[in-house]
Amino acid sequence: MFGVLYISYDGMLEPLGQSQVLAYLKRLVVGRRIHLISFEKPADWVNVIDRNQLVQDIADSGIVWHPLRYHKRLSTIATLWDIICGIIYGLWLVLYYRLTIIHARSYVASVMALVLKRLTGVKYIFDMRGFWADERVDGGMWPAGGHLYRVAKWFERHFLLNADYVVSLTQTAVDEMSTFPYLQKRMPPFEVITTCADLELFRPAQLDSLPNQIDRPFTLGYVGSVGVWYLFDETLRCFKLLRELLPDARLLVFNRGGHDYICERMEVMNVSPDSVKIEEADHVGVARAMQRMDAGIFIIKPVYSKMASAPTKLGEFLGCGVPCLGNAGVGDMAAILENEQVGVALSRFDDDAMREAIERLLQLTQTAGIKERCREVALRYFSLDEGVRRYASIYQKLDVHS
Image (tube, rainbow, N blue to C red; front, top):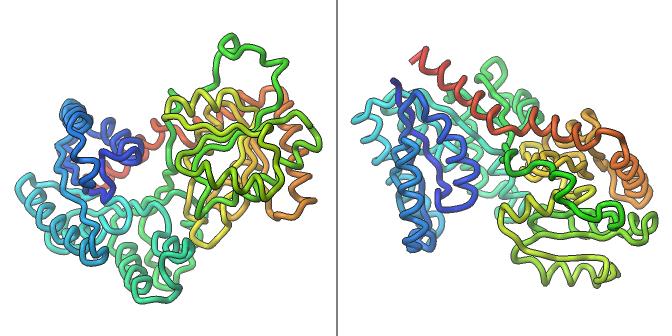
């Protein structure tokens, strides 16, 4: 039975670690040994009750967890220290347990994996999760062409040239990387595995669990962040155009930490507070709320780095049988919405384009069988089972050649 070392710079005590790392590894551990290195933030680690529950949960699954401390003070130096700690600990694990594959999630973990590959010859999976360096620039955290950006892109080049397998969230990103000069005739094997959703939780509600469906107003749903990558003003403009067609339509917003900003933008955009409901809920509460929505909306900045992104909320909305209004320039989202006829993708942000998109979205919500079609597309593109199957296939291919 071969062994895998999975390295994540995200902590397992964070929601992302549990939904996008542990959810996969708990299924992938069947038939193989998996050791997991993660970097846990001190604020999460001091929560003894949650920590002990997670330790037991991971142990029961058969995964061997090696939590290391995440350092933040003096950011660049702290990250370098974490990388050194990860390399030293990872080297011991690879040699002692004779692990044959290192699966690295994103860029910082891949620095550790690349060094370990050079030292031990293990197979290396670069699970890139997007164009991280370009996201730092597009998000305003790094200057374009600055020192940190150039260093990160140098590492990206070596990750791609040395990886035994590369996992991308989108086919659009794979197509873009195929144009990189240094990858001409040197493309590594790629697998597209999008961010998967918990489709057992995000599923259509039974009709008898949603009372008064006939009489209630049309509900447009917005879930998640309203900052950095999301164009919330454009969302409100679409909602105002929807209200011109359906005066009693309402906007249901689920968000954490951005309520003051949402209210401020509503006032600036002259959106009536009576037409918008802003709430906060946990993962289960969000799933139940999505079941009450007629359509979902999220508009993301169509910048360069976003071609490698796959918003999890798309899979969650579709899993609940809810068609969506999104936009082009974000990974494979537009292709999924338009080609599969489960939503509408904006290519422009002028009023005429938005009005046409809203009209098409309303027609789509009235189409016979739309909920079933959305659900089927979610199962095909965003199923955790399918994601696990693809990761397991990569492991098997690399183990054969190790």
